[in-house]
Picture 1 (spheres, rainbow, N blue to C red):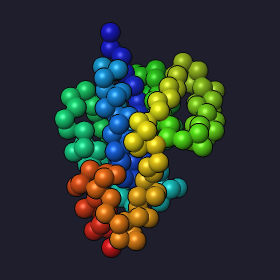
Picture 2: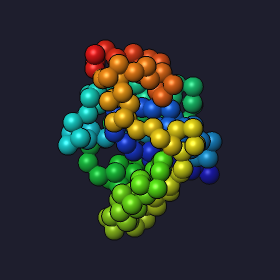
Picture 3: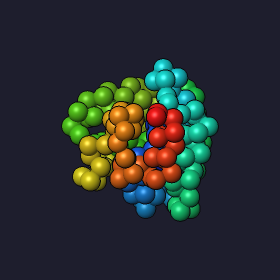
Length: 159
């Protein structure tokens, strides 16, 4: 069987919470496509090229991962990769409402594609890229939240 899943996101930057979802998904699926969304409307700190590069470095130890950028609808990206599954990470109950709304919209756009929710490990449930960027801008050391090379890139961008 060739089980494939799409894990889309902005990943600005990648956190240990994202890596938790990626590593666990890589044990369930034969192939995990990490789709780095351009997300121009979110005004990401890092360029899409930088985010792809960071994800590739952070997941280099996983052999069934493919990282690339995409622009447009995630269901179109899933179709391009011939995946019938989109995985979305949930941290807190507050994530669920937005993710549920997005999953229902995606189902209307492409009913053949399912969205699966995966709870992040409790060690990372409080992490968000936005919070990490704010902490770095105020001088915090965030190496326990992101890979060390990502912490250094954040420090250089924000200080």
